[in-house]
Image (cartoon, rainbow, N blue to C red; front, side, top):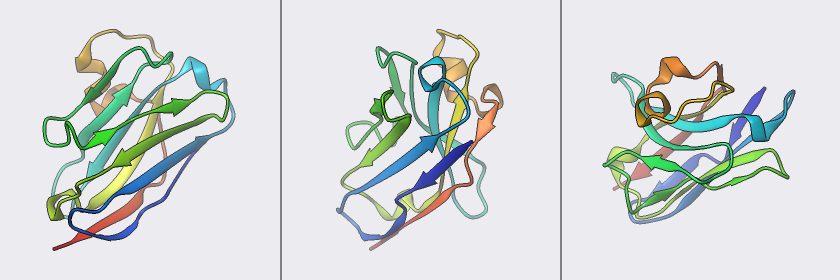
Length: 126
């Protein structure tokens, strides 16, 4: 199970940190990702991290502003967001996959994640 939290209302230029706590498996066996979905739009990739934290990926739209650290001891992955923009407004979902892939394509494509959290809403006001 994945439980995302930390969403809320923030002004443009502000920061927010999301958490995704997991249970029911060995967290270090899962690669993790964050996706988001804005109203009327498709779910899109935000950031992802490999099981051992050696590899991270982020969407061009958030590069330099968002990071995705994980703490395997706490079974938690985070999405640390800064310099937020109104266009970052969306429901943010964390996702997990036990399948081992090395290609960026599999980290950034939603259908290659088996488990999803319930989503947490981030609203950035201008």
